[in-house]
Amino acid sequence: MSLELKISNQPSTALATRLQEVMAEIGGAFGEDASPGEETIAAVAAAVEKAMADYGEDLTREGRVIELSSHALHALGETATARRLLVFGSGMVKAAIWEFSGGDPLWILDLRTMTVGEGAPLEMTLFLSLFAVLDTVADVWNAASGRGTLGLRHVLTTAELLAPQGRPKQRRDLSDEILRRVHDRLAHIARLRAWAAVPDVIPL
Image 1 (cartoon, helix red, strand yellow):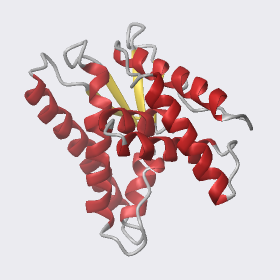
Image 2 (spheres, rainbow, N blue to C red):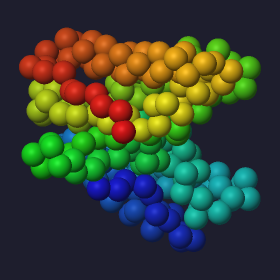
Image 3 (spheres, rainbow, N blue to C red):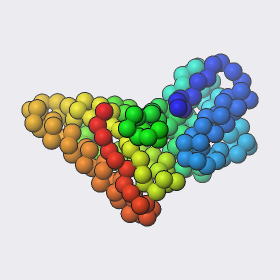
Image 4 (cartoon, rainbow, N blue to C red):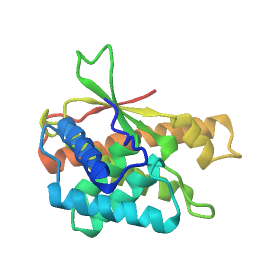
C-alpha cells in the first residue's frame, strides 16, 4: 500500500477528491474511517490551492501539498488526522508484506525522512521527532492489541549522522540505542493502551 499523494495541475475540486481518497486509504490502514468530512476536506483543498498559488508553487509538488494539507487540518482542529496525513501521506511510514509476518503488513519507518536542523542538539531532536511519529503510527496496532512488526530503515545511516566523527563501535552503540528507544516507546504506548503485546522492532 502506498499513501503518497499523487496530484497533477487541477482545480481544488479534484484536489479535494484526491485528498478524500488518500484519507480513506489511511483510514483503511487503521481499520476505521479517518476522513474529517467533505466540508473540511474541501476547505483544506481550497486553502492548499490558494497557498501554493500565493507562493508560486505547483500542485505537482506532492510533498508540499501533503505538508500544507497537514497544516490546514491542524488549524481546523483535526490534529490527529493532520499527523496521520503527514506521517503516512508523505511516505515516511509505509506498509510492506514480510514473508515471516503471515501476511500481516510490516510497517516500515524510514529514519532518513526525519531531518534535523543545523546547530540543533541532533540526538534530542531525533528522538523527540521519532516519538511523535511513533505515537501516530501506533494506531495501526490498536485493532491487533499491539501484535505486529515495525521495521526501521537506515538505522546505521542515522547513527552516522548523530556521530559523524565517531568510531565504528560508537555508531553501532547509537544504532542499538535507536532500536532500544523505539522499543521502549512502543512498550510505553502498549501500557497506556492496555495492549496484549508490544510490536516487534527490527532493523532493515
